[in-house]
Amino acid sequence: MSDRKGGRAAEGQDVRQAGDGDPGCDQHREHRCGHPVGEGAHGGQRRELSHFGVKVAIIEPGFFKTFVTSTPVISRNFQEAWDKASPEVKEAYGERFLAYSLKAIGLLDIICTQDLSLVTNCMEHALTSCHPRTRYSPGWDAKLIYLPMSYMPTFLVDAVVNWSTPSPSKAM
Image 1 (spheres, rainbow, N blue to C red):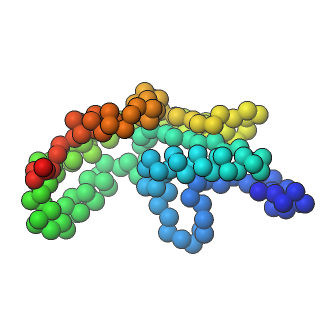
Image 2 (image 1 turned 90 degrees about the horizontal axis):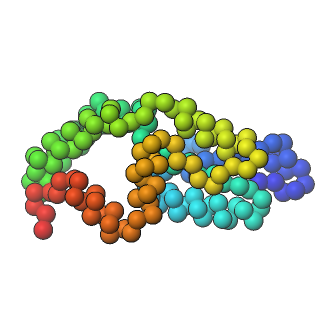
């Protein structure tokens, strides 16, 4: 932001991501921004900064083929976490849960979009356009699944998610 007296913003636009802070801190942006709480934080930032003439554009992508969605890495980490889990946890969730989860992780290769230019094009539009949009949803899964789900009542989204995922063996 500018102090209107030749401060830092007078040198050029200051582009930040939500969650930017001390660069020395260990931050997991991929993990944090993927959560619904990110939407509330971004909306709050957008409204708060609008008083200072700052426009915040929110980019909410679907699944893209990156290191974060690498199936071998995720499968290995999931299996390691399962192996380290206590016998009580393993009994509560059951082997069926593990098998289903590993199978679902394998589907990421099919679900993930490989064309990262969809996201970078949104970033370019948000930064260079005279009238950038408030929200961008790159990827067909974001447009056709996640965006509509964000407008549905919570109980309906919970029902769909619970229907499509296995319940733990010892669930009530």
